[in-house]
Length: 299
Image 1: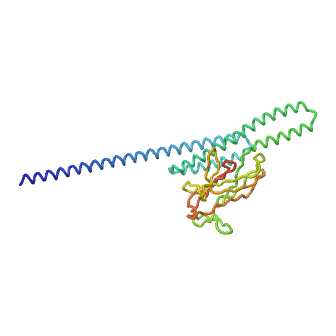
Image 2: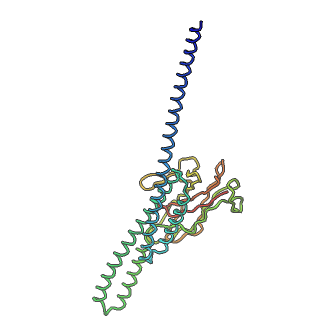
Image 3: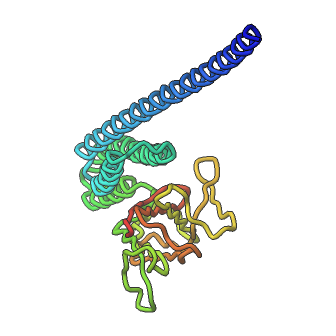
């Protein structure tokens, strides 16, 4: 009887030992998986930090290039200064970046747009320099050949100066004096409370540019919420941009004559769920180019 009880006790002990061994194995596997996940999180945070530092460095480099070109070319200084200020705004936003991977992607898209704009302005600068050198040579030759024809020389000088000014202006339009804000009521009273706003309003001036092709143009507006998503009316509105397509929030058709158009205002009504509190950004596009951006923080 005593041997039987001893045998039963040994069996219970063996069963408990096996259970403890299994529990130890499960806990060990869970600890290993948790450590693996923590290590991966550290790697991702490190990578995002490195990407932020790299993005900041690229923005600083682009700012330096704009400053150098602005010093060398006074005729484009207004547009260069405006672009430089927009880049500084983006850099200030990047400095507040907390590690949202989707937001980092949006920053990079903005950086690419600024780099593309810089390439356009750089090409205009090079073209202006070439035209200037060519005009200088032509003018010297004409001055020697027609030194006694003062009237003709004066006319040619005026034509050369007009041509140089037109080349300097380039063909890219710019939106400036951008006011982006939430409004409500018939009198469109400005409001910063997200749940009180009936529509967002973007008002701006479209620059004068006699070189740009005149006629019908469509202005596309993208409103990007704090979550990085573009607000749309749900019909899949898209426009062509850099060989692909981009979703836009709303648009406006205009007849461009080459003169500046002041107080252009485009509206976007509040969605059924209302606007989101936080930073909302507006991007303005025309002729497949980003021509201006601004933001407002809603409470």
